[in-house]
Image 1 (cartoon, rainbow, N blue to C red):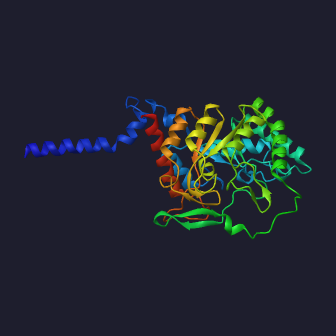
Image 2 (image 1 turned 45 degrees about the vertical axis):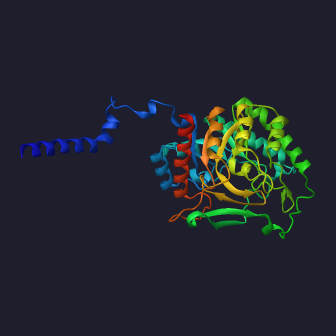
Image 3 (image 1 turned 180 degrees about the horizontal axis):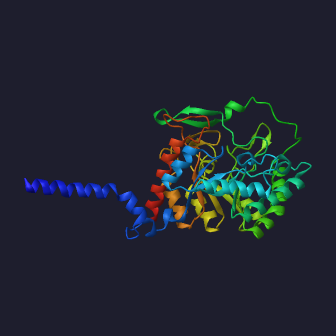
Length: 374
């Protein structure tokens, strides 16, 4: 009987100690903190996209996962400054502060202000737009934001022909089939456009902006065209291959003139049975220090016909991709992108399901730990 009583007391004490562990871990400095024993996420800055402002559920889950980087735009409405343009320094400062009150750091401006059709199509007024863009760069640099993800897709940006295609287990994914847009009317109001003209417009922009970015310590990270086809409705698209990005960095050589390595976009380049070698491309640009931001995602198919995929269900060897980032010493922001919409979640913002994002972060973090301890 006494022995039974002693066992009960011993077990009860152990249970009480275990239940008190979370509080003790916060207050007792002698309890080892695992994050002090290794470099968190191999130095990569895990982040999530917030294109619709502060989403309380997503923010709470991000903090629970210890994913404290935020990626988004500059929205004056978010900070009650609708009377000011989104490149205004006060607006930028207020938006960054709003994220900090949530316990997150705004790491990347994705979809920057003052970079629209006038600049990309070489229309009257582009010099004013470019000057506003330089003011925007000064504003983000002043508050410690150093990465801008932009694209060269005027008029028609990210494009899909379906956003609810059933995938594994009934999850919904976005997809693109070029046949579905063959009969769409050409956009002619901007005059005659060509790939050569698009390259000329980009060169004009880069020569004006990159020297200023370099002075400010701002990294310009160009996103590939998505989908990476030659044109959509008569609008030329030029950032559709690894070779195009090699040309980009040679136009205005600078540590500020780099890219967003969107794996899904690069994986969908090429025709049927073709495609870019993802680890090889990561090593090429990564060794030059020009991968400034990563969209870690995957697809099935090729540029004319593809669909998004779960991170463990696409065409790319994701372990080898992560190994390449690790080997080149990538330490920049990295986020999941275009995740499937999973059961119980909304498909209102296709590609940005909260539950799908949880799966993606677990997968990405597991890969980072795997390659860093191999």
